[in-house]
Image 1 (cartoon, rainbow, N blue to C red):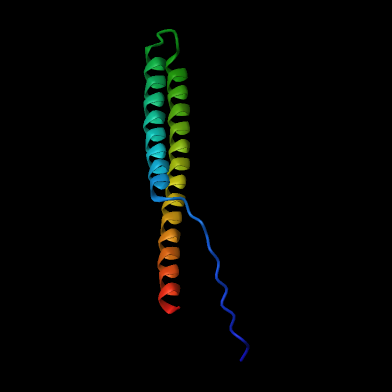
Image 2: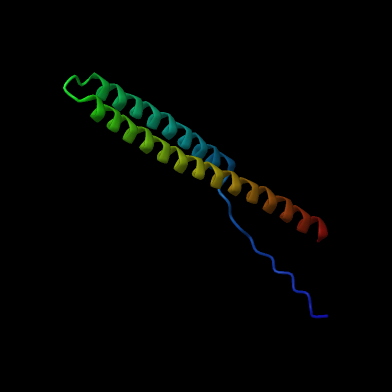
Length: 101
């Protein structure tokens, strides 16, 4: 068989406080998006001069935009969780390397 080479690479990962800050930021942005969408819906519903069809179309547009933004935030959260898992694996891996030395 061939020679086995062990490559050791140090990866610097943000600390847990930074990860928590990112999670909090994502949750805060989600809450703000929801509140803003609700305010826009109420403003449209309160406009007496809009036709019923126009109101429905505008409300549907807001709902779609809110849904798209929610999907983006969910994707960010998944990526953050994935990063956390990778960080945990790196810590366990580096501990195993230290034990092996």
